[in-house]
Image (cartoon, rainbow, N blue to C red; front, side, top):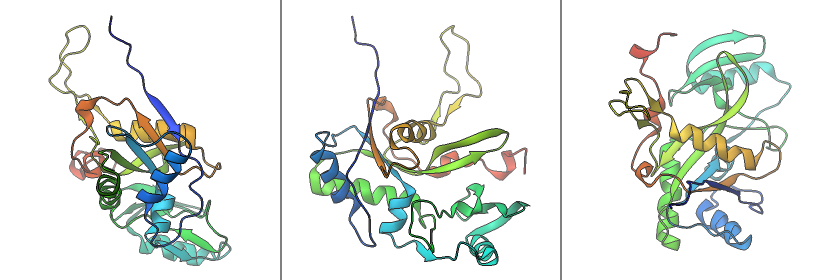
Length: 239
């Protein structure tokens, strides 16, 4: 009898504060090894946007009490303002993400600073993946995750904003379900599902910015882009 499928998710603790220019591959791999759970080939490494932005110098000064300055910063990071309500702005970023405040975050950063999204999250994920391969000889997938709200649903969840080495979307159209019926519209947002699952062990306020997801379907490991998850405007019924 074959073993039932299983998935393990392990938080990587002890990473510490990240500064501009830090090589995340070295820091994360060392922390994972130190706690007895070294990264292995076929793992998926999920890393929060915050430490990527810190390493890439995407931190800016921002007075938390200066609402006008905050709005100017949001607008500078946006290509379109979707909705305003009080101090909240929903906008579309250059990446194509529709989210609150252009993804600008002031949590878990020094007072008086704000973290901007990485310029090219896919490139950030690929750099980390390439560095792990070059330095340690391991072939892993890498996701950059961030916390987003969702239309029509209360609460936040983590989603993928950058991906390398893992399918962002698994297309099940024209395959059959368990009863043999043809699936006509099923596309699974695998990268988002993995990012959300990893957040369960990282948490929002625990200072844990990375996790190892082990046991994913080998067929999901392929080159992809976060653009796979962004619905084209022509197919978006809500724009």
